[in-house]
Every structure is written in structure tokens, then in C-alpha cells.
Image (cartoon, rainbow, N blue to C red; front, side, top):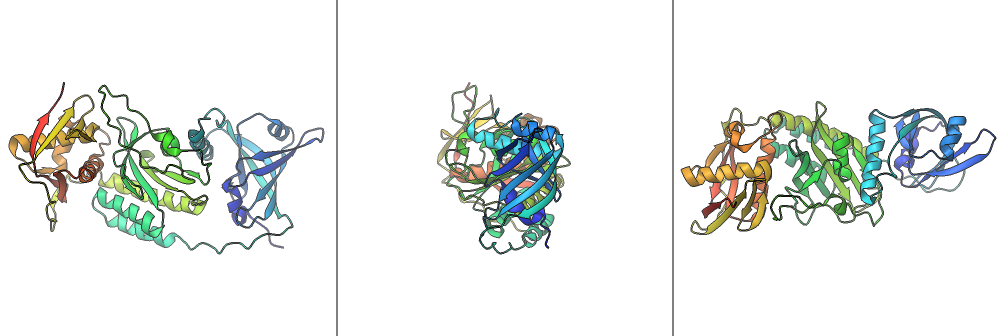
Length: 445
């Protein structure tokens, strides 16, 4: 007789089809209720969310034995789990992960109070039995993703600049893992917001768009420092509505770069980028298909995020010892030098506009304004990361300045605008400002 394990029926724990739990009161009265999800804790334990003090909860506290009925979403086979309540956790990694996932779901529906997690009820799995009945053939086992992860890790270990590391991860997600919609967001520690530095698969890149910590799946994963994976949603849950916001600036100007996410996603996963327990950003993927991301995908993205987080931390001082590039690429093509480009900077938030079109704000805006002034006043075109890091007027944070990420953001925003200003990397920690127009710099009151 084959003994089933939780690993054998792991797809049943994805929350795609609600489970049923049967409990019994002290007087012998049975009670059956639906569960939104049974969480995998380890090969011998599952966790159920404690959100309400209902009849199931009362019965469990009086009689810790229960039975779960699970349905496999691919084979439609039923499995019966005999479980025993052990304890309730109100902190720790498992609790935080469950809490964050519920909060991420709540962000789609505006039901944060209903989805509030009071505790994670831990149960020991005593026995798993297959319920007799017809079922479909199990799908073939998925090919190992270890090869893709190895190639990504090897490439990250060789990269020498942050933009290379971002491109490597994006290529792995889109080409190796065949994920169509992806984003990488980094943290602005001063504003406590996440800003998009790379994306793939959207009609607009959204580079520079911002999300608050605790907002939506991305913001909750960042705030809780734990992965969040949602495998199915209702069509009414519009994620883009949950993360779009109106900025309360001192000036009545549109400085909100549109968020590029899918209007009606069915699967999403957000994984925090961490280094030494410190939040650096979020790796985010989504799909219009249900069940697109499994627990195996989560394992891969968590591993990938760990490698990327380490790379970001190691490369954050890129340019302290600048070295020339072996062969600089050709300079970008710019407009005729007699064309006029009007540049406005608003001091309240360093927002910069090019010919009335919003470009960038914050520290990246302050960097851009410094570069333009040096070019206009002194004719400078060559700069280094080191000098920017030492320039107090820019306002870089003292602890984690993310200078390289801000330069990448500025470079990509300029490229998207199709205007005659570009940043071109000329070596490690060195870059050139390419200007193909006459500049008119103004600072309105």
C-alpha cells in the first residue's frame, strides 16, 4: 500500500477549489464548512487561517480532531486528510506569509477588515487517503527549472553593472521561463515607495511608475518581506485600480507615470528583493491565465530574487573606482543642434518637464537638473557616479542611495521620450550626457 504525502497532493493546496472541513462539537454534533485555502507548512503539517470565531473554531478548541476534503484541480480526484489541531501562531514566517497573501487579496476588493488574519492554526496531518471514484490522468511531471536558475545565477555572478543584472533577470523570466508580463521595482527608502526600473510585455513600459508600500500585491509583499502568490481572481478584481493613485503635490501638475499592469490579471506573484534582511525592491510577474504560477515557480523566483538582491547590494557602489570601457558604443543620434528644448524644474519635488511633457522627479530629477546645468554653464558632457554620490545638492540618502538605479531610471525615461537628450555609459561608473538641441532651463516659482 502506497502512503500518500502532502507533496503528492500539493496542487490540492493551491486554493483553486475551496476545501471542506468537518469538525465535531463536544456533544457529537457535526459541522461542515468551506475553507478558502489550506496552506502547506511542511510535509507533516498544514495551516488554516483563523479569521473568525465561528462554529468550526469553537469545535476545534473543544475537540482538536478534524477532517479535510480536498479536490485535485487537474485530475479532479478527492483526497481526505485526517488532521489534529496543535497550536495557533500569531507571528513568524508562516503567519506573515498567510497574512500578506490575505491582505494582497483584500487589496483587490476593499475588504481589508474581512480578510484580517488573527492567527495561523497549525494542524498535524495524521493520514491522507484517496477517496474512491473516477478521475483524470495526471499531467506529465514538469521539467526541472534548475537549469534555468543555474544559467541566471552564473550570469549574475559575472555582471559588473546594475543594468546588466536587471537585464539578465528579465531575460530569464521572459525567455527561459516564458513569463509574458514582468516587472522589477526598486525601493526609494526616503519616500518609502517602489518605482519601476524594468518591465516587459506591456503596451507602455511604466518605467518610473510608483507604488506605495502596503498597496496591492506588490506593496504588501514589500511591506511584509514575504512572497505573495495568487493563482486565480475574479474578473472584477482590477489590480490596476488598486495601485493607481493621485499624487498630492504642491503644484497642480501631472507627474504620475501610468502603472503598466494588466487590467484583469488572473495570476500574480510578487517576491521581495532582500539583502541581509533589508528590502531593496520587488520582483513581480502576472498573467491573464489562471493557475499560471505554481509553488515551483515561487521557489524559482524566490531563489532568483535572492541572487538579484545580492547583486544589487554588491553593485551599489559601482563607479567608486571608475575604469574606462574597452570599446564605447556609438553615440546616440540626436536632433539638429539648432532645435530648442525647454526644460522646467519644480523645486518642491524636483519634477522635470521637457517641452511640457513630464519626465522624472525626486532624486533622479535632481541628478538630471545638475547634469543639464553643468552642461549649460560649463559645457561638461562627461560625468562619473562617484562625483554624483559626493554632491550634497542632489540629496541622495545617506545609507542606501540607489544611485545606479536612479541613473538607469533616468536613462530609460529619456529613451522613451524620443527627445534629443540621452545618457550613454562610457565605462564602469562613467557616462556621457549627449545633447542635440539648444536648452532653455527655467525654474518656475
